[in-house]
Image (cartoon, helix red, strand yellow):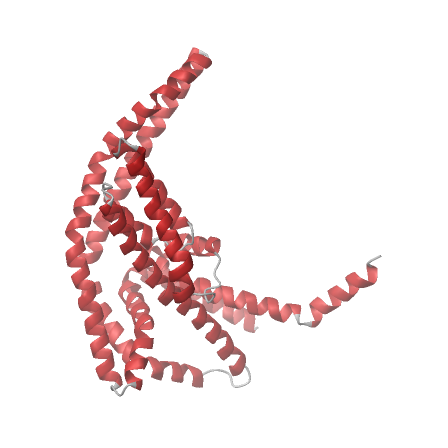
Length: 356
């Protein structure tokens, strides 16, 4: 009966999220910011500040800093996105010229009809890919501009952040009093594990991504790569999936470098920036800021993000990591209970009895 009640609650919650996904976005963003800033508020409170004063200072500084960065970067990113979209046909032409010797070799070694079919298919797929990439970038950029202009994100998110950050400890205490007394220690232990996982990812990994984005953007700009700021920041933002973000950024950066530079030395400098970023991430940033607290497999993170975006849009993407952390902790807890329970012990004994 309890399982049915919990399952019904999860279904109702998912249905409400699908209906209110657009409205919930500023509230989810405010909750994420409050969770990110809560340790700083606790520290200021230990130093003698009242919770209201600490919350006011932290919230004001955070959103002023975010607004300043947005004002500074917005014109640069807008110019680079538009320029990149306009240069896609040129990049396609250069790649076609570079591929000409390969096509000539194929033409001399393959029958004429096979070459024509291959050329037609390649041209068709290349044209469709270029159009798809161009439309995707334009849609993403227009969606980002619309997102920045939404009044709710500008007004509601700071308010939600302030009130949640001010009452965070009170909310946690209130939830703790509502826990079933018999199961309270077990639930507290799992919530602590979820908090540890989220803290390692949201706070630690977000800081790593931010620092990597700044490093890649500055490094690629200094070596003279076109759209270095855009490629660098984009690589940093998607670096929360280990290796995936770097590989996407490396492929994009090297692709632009092969088209832009005539010498291989400049291409090697672009590759060196990404190699240096991986060394800094692997030996300095991740061990100090994240450590072994995350416990989320990269494939599980990628699946959660895709599933959340497909089901609930941008709000689902924002909720994907917390939900993935909760599911991961609950799965590990269930496995531990199974391995230490009588069902697994009986199966192991039966297997041992029948073993030769």
